[in-house]
Image: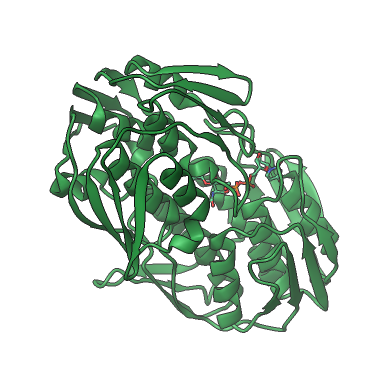
Length: 422
Ligand code: EPU
């Protein structure tokens, strides 16, 4: 239960390097279930969600180590307990993406229903519908999903769209299951997020036959087996976006290395429109702001739309804009836990259903606030960098789930963040 004390306002300057993607690493770690043997994954970030995923895989029977150079080695030769326990899946919803690979490899799997979280109800009905289409028999037992396919899975045409668009982890689950299914699977309305592209590229390196990668129609020709892999995960576009907002909110110039702008065009476009310069440079970019912050209307959408995982951070920035902005959340309509906390820091935000009207204020003022979920907490850190006084953020473990020691990354740039262990 660590606490952050953040002194503001500060100006940040210097260079920061983006780590490997959390949301690409998690399904790729699960994909190693499909290929008995030793896989090596590079650039997997040191985050608590990654440790939870490692624990989940260990309980299945996998052996995991982290080399001195940071590589994660997963030996999935033996999987003798195809169960995703509640105790672990409740801590990290991404645990659900072991269901597809376990079913494909072991023909049986029992995984706890993840339940909701601070950002919403988060059902998994589309995951289950997809696996049922592939021939699995699925039933619920005491809060667990029990899936069986005694004769293996069979390829089929599957529609993965839902009320809120495609599903990222649902696509990951079905894609992984389909690699070892008999025959051809066509996934329509597949998620196109860069993390799904990375997973599909990794699966192909393991010997899968996936085409249409990056499009909403994925075609998978089932194969008999997959081989272990050495694979480097992509940089974290959400971490990169968070650093971009840090540069914008503190009105300075930051060099951000190891970031792929083509994966972030919706964000870059919004930042440019509100007066932030984002210039590509080598394998990253330079982000700077000199003038005041302009207003914007933002609607979150599946990729290539504006990512929900950067909605809270942009809200912190627009809280200081000259005028009114509107932010509409179309992926997780209840993902607004940060609104009340930002208002405690003198922001002027009004929630109206799945939208927030952001009336820009001249300055934010430090206050004690509570981190509620990962990205909401990042927004509070950003706001605190610009706010007058010392902000205290409680429940920092939410930030540690997705940002590796954020204070050690921002302090060398000029931030004044102290972590207090309580
Ligand atoms: N949905 C359903 N039924 C399903 C699955 C999803 O109705 O079976 C709904 C969800 O409730 C939501 C929408 O569909 O309204 C999209 O959810 P999605 O399934 O795409 O989310 P996810 O796969 O569970 C991943 C990321 C999230 C990110 C979302 C959207 C990981 C580990 N998680 O979640 O990341 O917000 O995609 O891009 O990849 C984060 O990193 O902070 C985070 C929450």
